[in-house]
Image (tube, rainbow, N blue to C red; front, top):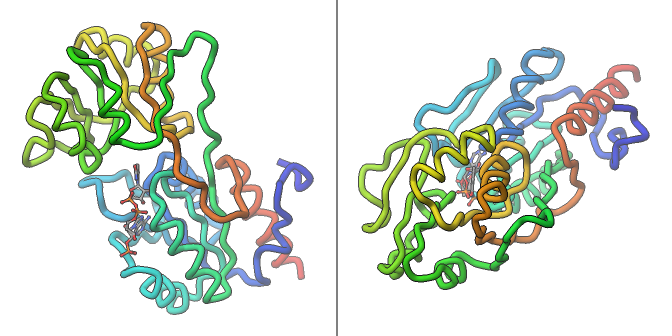
Length: 267
Ligand code: NAP
């Protein structure tokens, strides 16, 4: 990507340095970024995960797992590791870590950019019912529905009161206890194609899909499948985006880093 296509001028955002980058992950985009930066090998990189997944795919670079201990803990980490740039590639619904990253970078003087995936927008054939909260999503499901909850287990408690609805949850790791009484569980990553998701929804006789407007390509197959099957989607709106500056794709972040570090090294 040429410099003119980048929405932010890297040399104005990154202090003159080739000190490490801290990449905050937990998304498919962060994982791709980490792999590509590690493969490139020119940029010192620390990849950070919260530790929610038991066996995450790990890139070939320095990795740390677990919380930092709030904003102050993150500030200490940035100072101790001499971090020049924080790349916040966390999930759009992971608002706490994004707030902490913004505050800690500001405090320590590190540069920071956020990778914000574009929102999904409906096609003419889509049957979307947009809601602003999990509670509202639980409320609008009709009695007798069989809803596929494409949500983490920590977000499903509010559906328990809907004893007149059946649920299926998909989780990466099998939970130790059932997060909802009236639910079936399937384990594994989401399907990567609409056809895979169509087969699954058909087999399970799903009538409604409940998910968040996460954006990005990794989770889009379920939306495309719902469209093909004519299933209503209860779509939970995103919380406000992290503080700017934002980039919207892995390629943009890579171009930003490349230009920033190149301009530094040519000085
Ligand atoms: P959150 O509410 O924003 O963060 C809660 C705490 O988890 C943070 O304060 C931080 O702990 C720790 N944390 C989060 N991301 C971290 C990272 N990349 N590295 C180190 N510590 C991190 O986030 P969440 O919603 O619990 O999500 C946790 C992780 O799962 C995020 O990294 C996110 O990208 C990923 N994820 C979230 C969702 C979702 O729906 N929220 C979906 C897919 C993936 P300390 O305060 O102790 O530093």
